[in-house]
Length: 232
Image 1: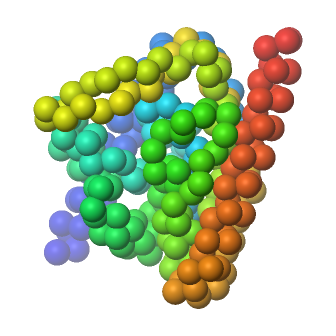
Image 2: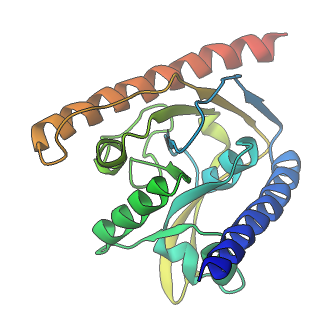
Protein backbone atom coordinates (compact mmCIF):
# COMPACT_ATOMS: atom_id res chain seq x y z
CA UNK A 1 0.00 0.00 0.00
CA UNK A 2 2.82 2.38 0.90
CA UNK A 3 4.52 1.68 -2.44
CA UNK A 4 1.28 2.42 -4.28
CA UNK A 5 0.90 5.69 -2.38
CA UNK A 6 4.45 6.71 -3.25
CA UNK A 7 3.91 5.87 -6.92
CA UNK A 8 0.70 7.92 -6.93
CA UNK A 9 2.51 10.83 -5.25
CA UNK A 10 5.35 10.76 -7.81
CA UNK A 11 2.86 10.46 -10.69
CA UNK A 12 0.98 13.53 -9.46
CA UNK A 13 4.21 15.52 -9.20
CA UNK A 14 5.41 14.35 -12.61
CA UNK A 15 2.14 15.22 -14.33
CA UNK A 16 2.01 18.54 -12.50
CA UNK A 17 5.47 19.62 -13.69
CA UNK A 18 4.79 18.39 -17.24
CA UNK A 19 1.54 20.35 -17.20
CA UNK A 20 3.29 23.37 -15.74
CA UNK A 21 5.91 23.31 -18.51
CA UNK A 22 3.16 23.19 -21.16
CA UNK A 23 1.28 25.96 -19.34
CA UNK A 24 4.39 28.17 -19.24
CA UNK A 25 4.96 27.67 -22.97
CA UNK A 26 1.33 28.47 -23.77
CA UNK A 27 1.45 31.52 -21.48
CA UNK A 28 4.47 32.91 -23.32
CA UNK A 29 2.66 32.47 -26.64
CA UNK A 30 -0.78 33.64 -25.55
CA UNK A 31 0.01 36.61 -23.30
CA UNK A 32 1.73 39.80 -24.36
CA UNK A 33 3.44 40.09 -21.00
CA UNK A 34 3.20 38.28 -17.67
CA UNK A 35 4.36 40.27 -14.65
CA UNK A 36 4.67 38.74 -11.18
CA UNK A 37 5.31 40.52 -7.90
CA UNK A 38 7.90 38.55 -5.91
CA UNK A 39 6.82 37.00 -2.63
CA UNK A 40 8.30 34.42 -0.30
CA UNK A 41 5.78 31.74 0.63
CA UNK A 42 5.78 29.90 3.97
CA UNK A 43 6.83 26.27 3.87
CA UNK A 44 4.24 23.52 3.95
CA UNK A 45 0.64 23.36 2.77
CA UNK A 46 -1.05 26.60 1.85
CA UNK A 47 -4.17 27.83 0.08
CA UNK A 48 -3.73 30.12 -2.93
CA UNK A 49 -6.94 32.19 -3.23
CA UNK A 50 -7.26 34.09 -6.50
CA UNK A 51 -9.74 36.33 -8.32
CA UNK A 52 -10.97 34.98 -11.64
CA UNK A 53 -11.11 37.39 -14.62
CA UNK A 54 -10.69 34.75 -17.36
CA UNK A 55 -11.36 31.08 -18.00
CA UNK A 56 -7.69 30.12 -18.38
CA UNK A 57 -6.57 31.66 -15.06
CA UNK A 58 -5.80 28.21 -13.54
CA UNK A 59 -3.35 27.59 -16.40
CA UNK A 60 -1.67 30.99 -16.02
CA UNK A 61 -1.44 30.83 -12.22
CA UNK A 62 -0.08 27.28 -12.11
CA UNK A 63 2.60 28.30 -14.62
CA UNK A 64 3.82 30.93 -12.14
CA UNK A 65 3.81 28.87 -8.92
CA UNK A 66 6.99 26.84 -8.55
CA UNK A 67 5.55 24.11 -6.32
CA UNK A 68 2.86 21.49 -6.98
CA UNK A 69 -0.67 22.66 -6.28
CA UNK A 70 -4.03 20.95 -6.57
CA UNK A 71 -6.56 23.21 -8.25
CA UNK A 72 -10.28 23.17 -7.53
CA UNK A 73 -11.78 23.22 -11.03
CA UNK A 74 -15.32 23.18 -12.34
CA UNK A 75 -16.49 19.67 -13.17
CA UNK A 76 -17.00 20.71 -16.81
CA UNK A 77 -13.20 20.75 -17.29
CA UNK A 78 -13.12 17.06 -16.32
CA UNK A 79 -15.52 16.32 -19.18
CA UNK A 80 -13.16 17.56 -21.91
CA UNK A 81 -12.00 14.56 -23.93
CA UNK A 82 -8.25 14.05 -23.74
CA UNK A 83 -7.83 16.25 -20.68
CA UNK A 84 -10.16 14.64 -18.17
CA UNK A 85 -7.91 11.75 -17.13
CA UNK A 86 -4.72 13.83 -17.13
CA UNK A 87 -6.33 16.46 -14.89
CA UNK A 88 -7.61 13.79 -12.51
CA UNK A 89 -4.26 11.94 -12.45
CA UNK A 90 -2.49 15.23 -11.63
CA UNK A 91 -4.60 15.36 -8.47
CA UNK A 92 -6.85 18.31 -9.29
CA UNK A 93 -10.29 18.40 -7.68
CA UNK A 94 -13.62 18.57 -9.53
CA UNK A 95 -16.21 20.96 -8.12
CA UNK A 96 -19.73 20.05 -9.22
CA UNK A 97 -22.89 22.08 -8.95
CA UNK A 98 -24.15 19.74 -6.24
CA UNK A 99 -20.90 18.35 -4.87
CA UNK A 100 -19.23 21.37 -3.28
CA UNK A 101 -18.95 19.69 0.11
CA UNK A 102 -17.28 16.62 -1.39
CA UNK A 103 -14.72 18.84 -3.13
CA UNK A 104 -14.15 20.79 0.10
CA UNK A 105 -13.44 17.59 2.03
CA UNK A 106 -11.08 16.37 -0.71
CA UNK A 107 -9.16 19.66 -0.51
CA UNK A 108 -8.97 19.47 3.28
CA UNK A 109 -7.59 15.92 3.02
CA UNK A 110 -4.92 17.11 0.59
CA UNK A 111 -3.93 19.97 2.91
CA UNK A 112 -3.53 17.56 5.82
CA UNK A 113 -1.13 15.60 3.57
CA UNK A 114 0.99 18.76 3.19
CA UNK A 115 -0.27 19.46 -0.34
CA UNK A 116 -1.18 23.01 -1.42
CA UNK A 117 -4.50 24.09 -2.92
CA UNK A 118 -5.39 26.60 -5.63
CA UNK A 119 -8.92 27.97 -5.36
CA UNK A 120 -10.95 30.69 -7.09
CA UNK A 121 -13.32 31.59 -4.24
CA UNK A 122 -15.66 33.68 -6.40
CA UNK A 123 -16.87 30.34 -7.72
CA UNK A 124 -17.03 31.53 -11.34
CA UNK A 125 -15.38 33.93 -13.76
CA UNK A 126 -15.82 37.51 -12.53
CA UNK A 127 -18.61 39.52 -14.15
CA UNK A 128 -16.34 42.56 -13.87
CA UNK A 129 -12.60 41.85 -14.16
CA UNK A 130 -11.86 44.96 -12.07
CA UNK A 131 -14.10 43.92 -9.20
CA UNK A 132 -13.86 40.86 -6.92
CA UNK A 133 -17.28 39.25 -6.52
CA UNK A 134 -18.69 38.07 -3.19
CA UNK A 135 -16.66 35.03 -2.16
CA UNK A 136 -17.82 31.53 -1.40
CA UNK A 137 -16.68 30.37 2.04
CA UNK A 138 -14.66 27.32 0.94
CA UNK A 139 -11.19 28.90 1.21
CA UNK A 140 -11.80 30.15 4.74
CA UNK A 141 -13.32 26.84 5.83
CA UNK A 142 -10.26 24.97 4.55
CA UNK A 143 -8.01 27.35 6.49
CA UNK A 144 -9.98 26.94 9.72
CA UNK A 145 -10.12 23.15 9.34
CA UNK A 146 -6.39 22.72 8.77
CA UNK A 147 -4.57 25.83 10.06
CA UNK A 148 -3.06 26.33 6.59
CA UNK A 149 -2.35 29.95 5.62
CA UNK A 150 -4.19 31.59 2.74
CA UNK A 151 -2.04 33.34 0.13
CA UNK A 152 -4.28 35.99 -1.50
CA UNK A 153 -3.52 36.71 -5.14
CA UNK A 154 -4.83 39.51 -7.35
CA UNK A 155 -4.89 39.09 -11.14
CA UNK A 156 -4.94 42.28 -13.18
CA UNK A 157 -5.87 42.21 -16.89
CA UNK A 158 -6.97 44.57 -19.65
CA UNK A 159 -10.79 44.19 -19.74
CA UNK A 160 -10.90 45.11 -23.44
CA UNK A 161 -8.88 42.02 -24.33
CA UNK A 162 -11.32 39.53 -22.79
CA UNK A 163 -13.34 37.81 -25.51
CA UNK A 164 -16.53 36.05 -24.48
CA UNK A 165 -18.00 33.16 -26.46
CA UNK A 166 -19.88 29.91 -25.96
CA UNK A 167 -18.43 26.41 -26.23
CA UNK A 168 -20.14 23.02 -25.95
CA UNK A 169 -18.88 20.34 -23.57
CA UNK A 170 -20.87 17.10 -23.56
CA UNK A 171 -23.74 18.89 -25.37
CA UNK A 172 -23.90 21.52 -22.63
CA UNK A 173 -23.20 25.18 -23.41
CA UNK A 174 -20.50 26.90 -21.34
CA UNK A 175 -19.35 30.51 -21.34
CA UNK A 176 -15.66 30.89 -22.19
CA UNK A 177 -13.79 34.09 -21.32
CA UNK A 178 -10.59 34.11 -23.39
CA UNK A 179 -7.88 36.59 -22.47
CA UNK A 180 -5.01 36.81 -24.93
CA UNK A 181 -2.34 39.13 -26.28
CA UNK A 182 -2.57 41.39 -23.23
CA UNK A 183 -0.54 42.08 -20.11
CA UNK A 184 -1.30 39.76 -17.19
CA UNK A 185 -0.15 40.92 -13.76
CA UNK A 186 -0.11 38.62 -10.73
CA UNK A 187 0.22 40.26 -7.32
CA UNK A 188 0.85 38.03 -4.29
CA UNK A 189 -0.21 39.12 -0.81
CA UNK A 190 1.18 38.22 2.59
CA UNK A 191 -0.07 34.96 4.17
CA UNK A 192 -3.31 35.24 6.14
CA UNK A 193 -3.80 32.95 9.14
CA UNK A 194 -7.43 32.61 10.16
CA UNK A 195 -8.44 31.10 13.50
CA UNK A 196 -11.77 30.26 15.07
CA UNK A 197 -14.51 27.66 15.12
CA UNK A 198 -15.33 26.12 11.75
CA UNK A 199 -19.01 25.87 12.70
CA UNK A 200 -19.30 29.58 13.51
CA UNK A 201 -21.03 30.74 10.31
CA UNK A 202 -20.84 34.45 11.13
CA UNK A 203 -17.09 34.16 11.75
CA UNK A 204 -16.63 32.30 8.45
CA UNK A 205 -18.58 34.99 6.58
CA UNK A 206 -16.57 37.79 8.22
CA UNK A 207 -13.27 36.09 7.41
CA UNK A 208 -14.46 35.67 3.80
CA UNK A 209 -15.17 39.42 3.61
CA UNK A 210 -11.66 40.14 4.90
CA UNK A 211 -10.22 37.81 2.26
CA UNK A 212 -12.27 39.43 -0.51
CA UNK A 213 -11.14 42.90 0.54
CA UNK A 214 -7.51 41.79 0.53
CA UNK A 215 -7.77 40.30 -2.97
CA UNK A 216 -9.47 43.50 -4.15
CA UNK A 217 -6.60 45.57 -2.71
CA UNK A 218 -4.08 43.39 -4.54
CA UNK A 219 -6.10 43.73 -7.75
CA UNK A 220 -6.06 47.53 -7.53
CA UNK A 221 -2.37 47.52 -6.63
CA UNK A 222 -1.84 45.44 -9.75
CA UNK A 223 -3.45 48.08 -11.95
CA UNK A 224 -1.12 50.71 -10.51
CA UNK A 225 1.91 48.46 -11.13
CA UNK A 226 0.66 47.71 -14.64
CA UNK A 227 0.42 51.40 -15.43
CA UNK A 228 4.02 51.88 -14.29
CA UNK A 229 5.21 48.86 -16.31
CA UNK A 230 3.50 49.99 -19.52
CA UNK A 231 4.82 53.55 -19.27
CA UNK A 232 8.47 52.42 -19.04
